[in-house]
Picture (tube, rainbow, N blue to C red):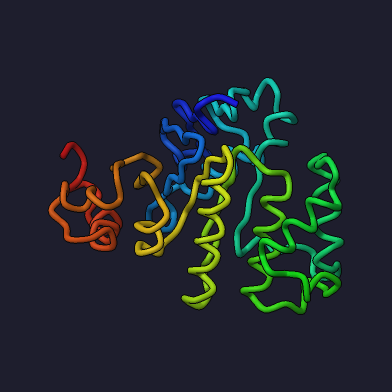
Length: 248
């Protein structure tokens, strides 16, 4: 594996007369968590869907672990995984069945052992044979993250992974993700509206506004560069006054 889990260059997505993502470029290194931030409609989910191969870019390139997804899509996406609270796993299947099916889809070697490791990592032993549809939101999130790590991905895409969870569960999940990243070569692209969470987990942040990267830097020092006390105030400024930040 190289030094970059993800490289995005001059990425654009246009729907008719609307530019959803406008010529953005960024990288995510191995063992790095990068926050992709911005108000609703900024282009975050569109960007993630292009990286996942769900949407085709209008132009630009996406490279995962050195592989261009336009040239070697299947192999690149085998090294990628994804979790989001809105992408629930099939509720009529048990935790074990879901993990087994996704393990097979990703070509995981020794899939039974890997399932056992994920069930232990996310404290899911007592839910092993429980249908996902009857689990609480926190339990479902843990199963989704177990699925997202089942193939030991080189690139992990997390879209609001702790949304709607209580603070204690969210803290445990953040800790688990950071431990996973620190113990391997995985890079993470993480979207969140929780700026405290972003300050805790992210090494760098990218602020999107109207499909463009408006600001980027260290989440702990970036607010002061733009005259704000904290990341939440900077987020509000990006959402309300993006034009005032351009060119600063």
